[in-house]
Image (tube, rainbow, N blue to C red; front, side, top):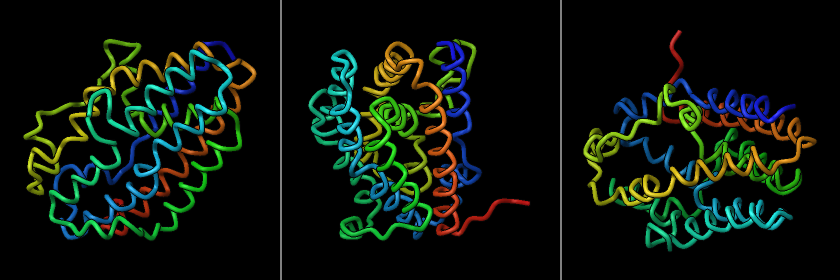
Length: 241
């Protein structure tokens, strides 16, 4: 698999990272009384432990340049020391706090079946398949969006970044703008994180690992879609006919 073929295969996976229910979470359809389900599952499945997931890729990697890229990501996620000022998992909890949800719910979240399977696959792919897969799953799939192609093609649609006053949690659910600290932090670092993730994948993953990386990404995508199905159902949503 050539470098360009590898890139296209990765972009093909990322462009499928879309779920039928997402519009209902961004247009106010989901009842506020159920929105906590989405936030709890996201937090317990990957937000709380995201620095750990990045760290798994870091400790397995033998390439100094890649470790430095991962270390910068890990440092920001774990401490907020470069941009946010606080660990990103802590900043995430400003969302439910600002919405008036009981934060004790986030201390012992019971994962939905799809969430449990997805988290299990995240653990397996970041611990047992080598640094290339771990880095792809964490820095490309989890952190990435369906708009990755815009990094390579100026004509491709970029990830929307509406004004903070138009953020769905502010516009539809009354979240105070000051509770968007994580959103602000992501906007400050994500551009460089996206570039770094692709530099690592395209410049440093051995060709012999390409098929393994793509196969693992496809597995994670399938598990993510099932996970999001379960969250949607728990939030009272069903796909249209």
